[in-house]
Structures are given as C-alpha cells and as structure tokens.
Length: 370
Ligand SMILES: O=P(O)(O)O[C@@H]1C[C@H](O)[C@@H](CO)O1
Ligand SMILES: Nc1nc2[nH]cnc2c(=O)[nH]1
Image 1 (tube, rainbow, N blue to C red):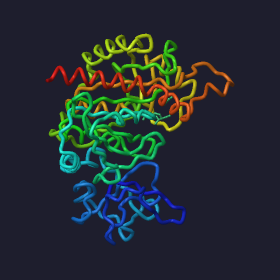
Image 2: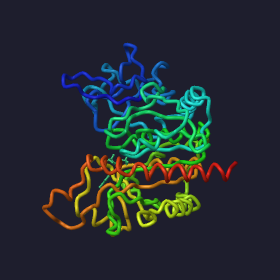
Image 3: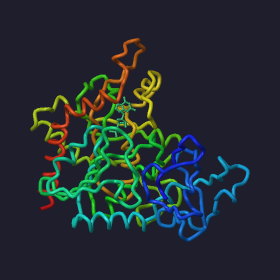
Image 4: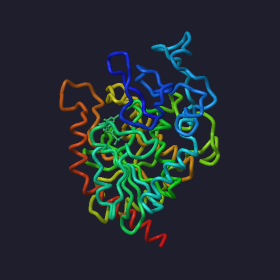
C-alpha cells in the first residue's frame, strides 16, 4: 500500500484516495493512522502484505496486537529506506501498464510545473492516464497539478508528460516524489524535461522570465535526505552517482538559441535553482542566505527528480518560470509576499512561451535523432 493515511478526526484513518494497497482484514493499512507528517509504512511479514511489490515483506507485522513501546497510536513505526518503497519490479509493472495502455515507448519525459499543465495539453493523439487509475501511483494534491499522465507525440517525438508532480511537502518521501522518473526510464525515456514555478532571487530576474537550470543546490540533501537513500539497485544506476554536468549543456545552448529565435532572449537566463521542503515560502534571512550561496531561483521541486534521472543516466533539461520576485530586504509591503495564486496566474500568462520553448527544443531533438 502506498497511499498515506489521513487522520479523520475520530481516531480511525482513511487513505488519501489512492487504493493501491491491501485492505484484507488483517492488514488494512500498515501505516500509522495519525502519522500524517511523512509517509512511513510499517511492516508485515505476510505475503499478501508486501507493500508495493514486496518492499515490506520479511519485516515485522505491526498490527494492533503487535504494538509495543515506541509506537504511535498503537502502531509501531519502522522507517523504510526510501529506495525500498518502489522496487524495480513495481516500477516495471507501472511502466508496462503505461506502454501497453498507450502502445508507445516515449523518448522524452516532461514534468509540468505549477500552472504549466498546458505543456501536456499540446501533445497530439494523447492517451491519458489518471494517476488514480495507474497501479501504485500517488495522487496529486496541489492546485495547478491535475494528476494525469499524458502520452502521445509532440513535434514528431514520442513523449510522456506528468500533468502534476509530487512534492515533499505533500507528505510524500523524496523517492516517491521522483518515482515517476524511474517509470519514465523503464518506459524508454531518454530525456527528462523538468519544469517548475520558482521565486526569483537574482535581482536581474523579472516575473515571467525563464531561467534555464544549469545547476542546483540541494538543500534537502544538505539535511541528509535523498531519493536514493537506502539500498541501491544497480539496475537503475550506481551507488554513488556523480552530479557534475547534470544539466545537459547542448540542450541549454539550443534553448538559448530558440529563445533568440522567439525574440525573448532578454527574458531567458541561465542559473542555479534550489529546492526547499516547503510548503511555506522563505523568510528574508533564508533568501539572503540562498543568494549568498549563489542561488538564482528557489522552489519546492525538481532537484530530487533530476537526481533520480541522472542516477539512471537520463539527459536532463530543466527550467524555472520566475513567478514572483523574492524580496531580500525587510519590508511591510504585502504585495512582496509570495502566494500560490500569483504563481498560478503568472504561469498561465507565460504558458504560451513555455510551450513554444519546449516544443521547439523537442523538435530539434527529434530531428537530430531522425
Ligand atoms: O511544482 P512546482 O515546483 O512548479 O511548484 C511550485 C512549488 C510549489 O509547489 C508551488 C508554490 O507556489 O509552486
Ligand atoms: N520555495 C518557493 N517556491 C516557489 N514557487 C514559486 N515561487 C516560489 C518561491 O518564492 N519560493
């Protein structure tokens, strides 16, 4: 079972609408009922109860009878290493579901940032998979993230796009947030296009600008969190992946050229993105610190997806749409505070330019490989 449980106020629990799991009497949850801060499945040794694809098998069953000291709400909490949440076979199952269901092996994967779902709307002959209908898939809980996977063609290339990503602040562990990247890999994807809405810290950036990511500062990694934490499965990639040159330089250069051809070169920058855990936006002191570290734009996603993609040797192109300017001086002005409505509104305004940039770049990749 992968859906986290939400306390419903009366001491019992319900899942978050994702019915991936095992609800067979003895094993109706295996997650702590009120443990909502972070998904943290507990374990069971019964065969029926292997979590997604057996990840929990062989561990201690922690139904109510088994609860001991150290339990929360009567259920023992045993952390699962992140990499065990989605074993290779489960990812393979999900990928098979998508490739068989769509009849395609897409070459390019797109992750649509907040308010940038229209990147998937331009896909031709789309086969649409609602997340809740994909086995073992999480659900989207954030406004501006529709929660569907769209498979089809764009500029002649076969693509799959996530209209809705998963964020750490939704309560999903990083490995779950970036699990779809591994699904993409096993579907045949070679290129990951990750997009996001971000706050501009670089004072040269204006709202509506696009920052092509050429590097990142992994703040969650500084704190010891990684989507690769736990035993490594070499079928995905190496134990210790290198991350220098994670962002494909050829694709960045091509995107700069495309920006010029579109007449928006003054709105295109190349810079460093940092992901914080969210869901709160940053304090002034945090923004000052990030700026001192060389960060140009700040958001709540993408970095763990890029790490997962590089781990399995995908080529990565990523950009941030600057949806708000981050204040780095103290002020009482309310309009300097970031808010999600503004983020969504700016993304809507700039969706045409973002779609054109992505389409043209995909066209180049497709033509180069034809
Ligand atoms: O999914 P992305 O990173 O594009 O979304 C950003 C981060 C938060 O989810 C949201 C905040 O407004 O926008
Ligand atoms: N962390 C963070 N994420 C964002 N997403 C869009 N704008 C912002 C921002 O200012 N900060």
